[in-house]
Image (cartoon, rainbow, N blue to C red; front, side, top):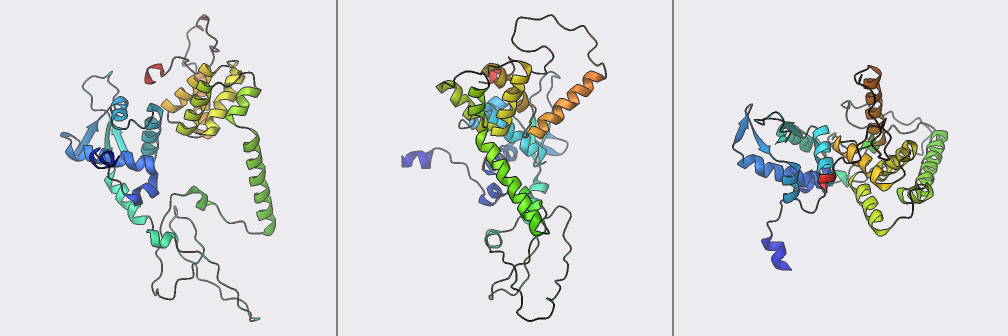
Length: 312
């Protein structure tokens, strides 16, 4: 067992980078960095890495094809990696990759170190005196940085903590100003949690006419929930019901379609569908509607049941 740990070419990983962008994304960045430093393909003054998704999966056999697509899409959206196309043939759509080193260095410099992150944030105690509490001076905070409660530093420290940005979206929400707002928000959160607990892909599948979940379909649902999210899998099932395609093959075709386009949230899906409807309204597709081909997929849908079959 120890030989596997020592001799199986371990991947070096920065813990700070993993905390900042996520474990899977940090692993991909580290591997891309290795290939980019050894690459001999130079375009526009930068070294590039030429790799297909199949090649990436050979390097990361513990990830599915869909997981790799999702990781690349997230890193592209965050602009931590830059993609291009320097292929000789126009029909070759294989992506070229390079790291955005400048942005990565800035993000790492702005990200607080472990000591500052683990420091306990406490509200200052109110004085027992009758006079009004002293007003704290306002600090200038960059637009993309969350507002942080004032910290009580340890007695051994004499310097002010620097303002550090964070990628946690939950910290960007403003604190409620009144007790009634706190109660309302807490009740809303409890209602959302209760709704999620009652409705999940597995129960929805069996309660809406898809059939009984066997071992294979259960494994596939779990895999898609891990690669995308429970919410997207549930949304795909709901749309399958609306389109009249109550079978797992159609649901999986929808999920492949969304994964190929890098959709990560239900909001992304709705935005993409709205854009598709707008294209149709502009008469971009003026040809007559194709005759039915005997499939169980509605012809007015934007999904292909055979999409991505070669990916498995």
